[in-house]
Image (cartoon, rainbow, N blue to C red; front, side, top):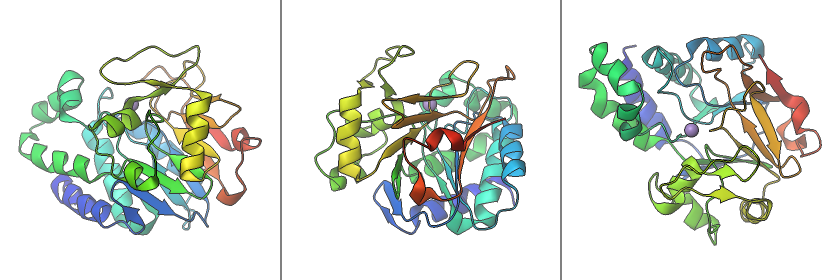
Length: 267
Ligand SMILES: [Mn+2]
C-alpha cells in the first residue's frame, strides 16, 4: 500500500478505535502487552523489537508516540508502523507524541525529509493522521501517554479524555517530564510533575503505573521514578548505539511497581 493509502487507512482505524472516548482509549489488557517508546525514524528499532517479540499473534501493541523527526528514514518507519497496524487492526494503539506536530517537523527534520523525497503532496494526509491519534491509553493497571501528568490534574476522566493536543492539558500530556535529576525546563507552558501529582493522576485514572516515553535516558534507555510508579521507556538510540528499550508484559493484570522493571527489555 502507498504511504497515502496507509495514512488514510490508519486515520480511519484511529478514529474508530474500539473503547475510544474522545482522546482516551480504555480497554482491558487480557492478552500480552508490548509497549514501544519513541522511535524517531529508527526503522531498525521497530524491526528488532518485533523480531524479539516474535509473531505472538495475540499481543496488544501500544506505541507511545514520536514516530518522526531526528532519524533519517521517518517515511520508511511510518510505512512500517502503518502496515503493521493495518494488518493487526484490533491490537495496535498508536498514541500521539509532541513530534506529531508540523511546527516540530519544520524545526527538526521530518518536514525537510518529506520535501527532499518528493512527498510534499502528502502533508495534509499526515496532519489529518496526527489529529486522529489519541493522547492517553488506560489498560488495566496502566495509564500510558507520551510526556507526563498535566497540572492541575483534571477533576474527572471526562475532562482528561477531552484534552486536545495543544490545549493546556493536552500540551502537558505531550510535553511534561518527571521532576528528577534529569529534569530541564522545556518552557512554553510545559511543567514538571512530582510524586504527589502522579499519585493524584493514578487515583483519577484508577491505575497503578504511568508508562511514558519522551526522554532518552543516556546510556540506559529507561528510568523509574517515584517508587517505580513512573516508567520511562525510549526505543530509539539517536544513532549512538545506546540501548533501545521496550516493555513486554505477558500478563498485564499482574504488573505492579514491584515487578515492572523485570519486564523492560533492552536491545
Ligand atoms: Mn517527545
